[in-house]
Amino acid sequence: MAEPLGQLQVTVIRGKKLAIRDFKSSDPYVIVKLGNETAKTKVINNCLNPVWDEELSFTLKDPAAVLSLEVFDKDRFKADDKMGHATLSLQPLISVARLRHIVHVSSGETTLRKVLPDSDNCLSRESTISCIDGEVVQSVWLKLCAVESGEIELKIKLIDPPGTKKH
Image 1 (spheres, rainbow, N blue to C red):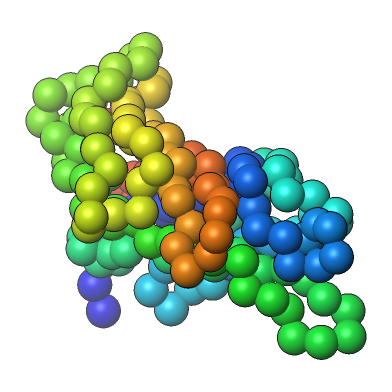
Image 2 (cartoon, rainbow, N blue to C red):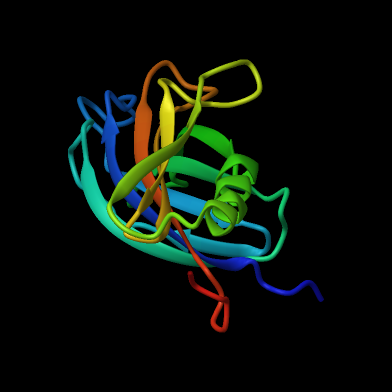
């Protein structure tokens, strides 16, 4: 079993311009997966621009890990409708976390890397990876795939495993 690389805190902040799956709106929720761990947000009723602001925690074990998310519309009497999905490679975040220990960034806020949208990711706009008071944080807007519209905003924080040397 691989040693954990740290704790990953994924804050599902909000959705924007989500697809209509009911009569005039949707009742969206998000399922986030990392490896064999899965977590789910609460359902926001009748909303195409929901604000969840929910923190989900995962154990990061794989340096090439990919975070995946799916958005669904909650239905009472039938299967929940799909509202799109997206993935995010955590490799840039992990490499910045390692770099932070080398360059000894520990206080204030420093932008360490920018990740641009391209055909290999689901980013809808430039993503920044910063060191904020010693913690590595990535701000992300993901464009949902396999759906007519929708974006999800995330904040991802990598917390070092216990016993990691801090500078």
